[in-house]
Image (cartoon, one colour):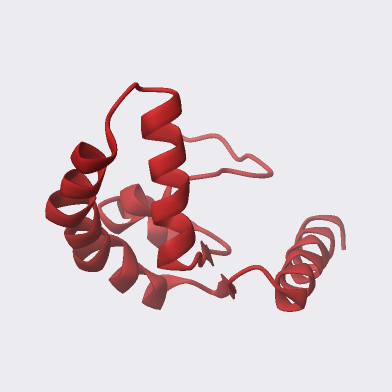
Length: 107
């Protein structure tokens, strides 16, 4: 049995394969530039996981990028709101989400 909650956060990769996407009030896709995604992965895998640059780049090219292109990018078509690549529009998107939450749940 599912109980109602005010906010339920689901990784978008999981939403594609999850029937819960049909019962969500709002779906948000947070877009990030591919260069930023790669830079974050490099920083994390090298500093926190002790991996070398060549290994991280090979994994990214062979597995991570193809998986993103196949699963994550197409899922943006299910989104009600797309938060764009870090700019003033991101701020507007967050304001919109807060207003939606307030109006939907408190009015």
